[in-house]
Length: 143
Image (cartoon, rainbow, N blue to C red; front, side):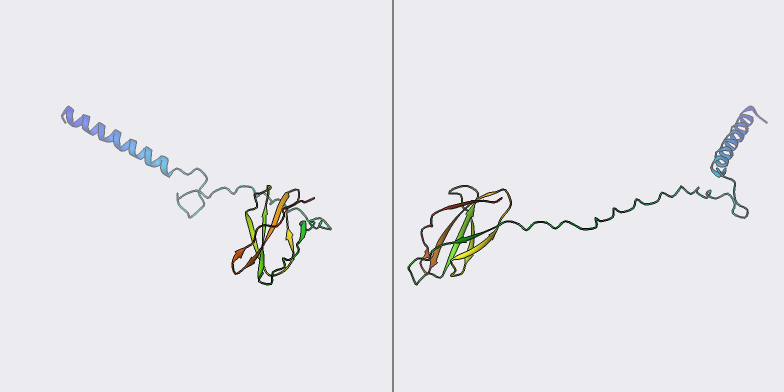
């Protein structure tokens, strides 16, 4: 046999041994195989079970929330039978009333507000010609 053939045969033997070692490492079980199961993936080791955190128990008597503050606004109707309703204007600064609520032909309304806030209000009367000039502005600060 020539030296080239011996070198090639040695290289092939080395390559086969390397491949077998590599394949053997892939098939080597990390845990003892169970009888009749072959060399497949090992059975995973179960992790300890952590009990769930219990939910907090409610208090014996829940405290009811206080109702939101309200204010009752009232005005004198104009001496004009053509009035069909009113517009209540509300804001958070004097002269800055920009939230409007259309009201029927009534002269009082109850408004739900937020605690600790100052409000400014005025009313306009409405008829077929549009809105009147504003009433006097009133201020209310909720407790």
